Image (cartoon, rainbow, N blue to C red; front, side, top):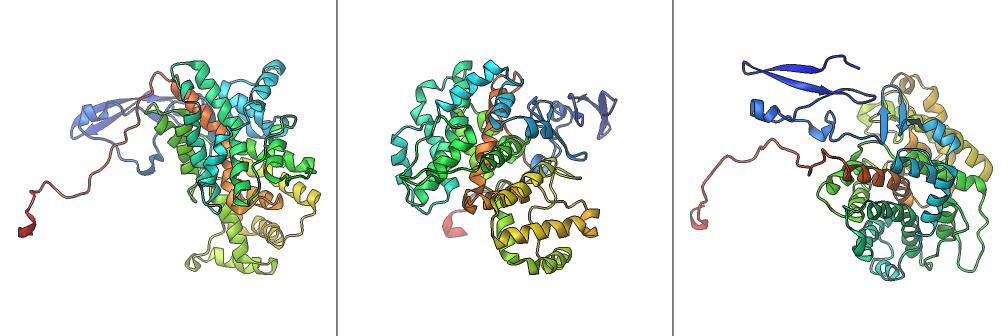
Length: 429
């Protein structure tokens, strides 16, 4: 970390001094709040890739070193020892729960999993073949209509309960979207089950039948929820915060986050992995696919390799790789695409081209393989991401509500349109 406390600029011969802000970890930031007043200039940063939009104590990422911390705890420790609901509690509250606190939180989440019966009618308003993310986005936003009497953002308890409801109901709404798309009746949550098992039962238990669930499946899903729970100021989390800065209700904010996550450049990456595997087709084609990926003129890209933030390796991928192989071995899945994925992983990890460029398989590569092995439809992959990320979204939303420096988001722009001009009547144009 830099040891200077301020920077000096020369603005057309006028000296400008700006303070440097430092967090617990990570790069220091130059505070440019007074820059327009001192210089008459704004700053330009396309995509905000070099700009800190807030102060946050939720998550820390070091992309160069491959570090991901939730509230200071390394992701590998949480993945190996914790559960998704415990991680959700940690993200929301800042500390790991005591046994009593954890029991209380689990009870609250479990008893808020039901959705209002009227929401079933909401789903029937969609086409049966609508994308599940469209249904999830709409149904989450509609929750504000069911809880309109508890939207006082000045009340800490109402804010907390909104967070609990969102974590509790997201799997219910997600499963409902899937079941509606295949013509099955919407299933009620089974309160005797844990979070991930309950969701899988709501997804896959056929009417009038008992689902026999392999414990490895529930464990793998819970692990994926942990790994997807938060990732600092990514596009969807920043969207939740931007909408939240207006004073919008939490259900609208999270619905906006879902919409942002839906984009193929964000949450749709694991879906793109499956499409790539389908394009490769068979294990025999992997070698030629590797060759095409090295040829920039081919236009072919290996999806699920490398990461925008992690310049070395994705710490989540190391964790999920082991679980991926365990799931495939345990379930004994016979699927040609999974054979393609495993051969592709093996080839890329040994190829000097990928090793030198640190293009290792990332969490999206492995999560897509696991979802495929669990027979979760491709169009549901981003929905699964949304279930896990809800914990992070509500943690950031709650943090924002008590931030004394928070203000409505209002980015600036460089205007490139026409100069001032006069209106010309239509008959003279």
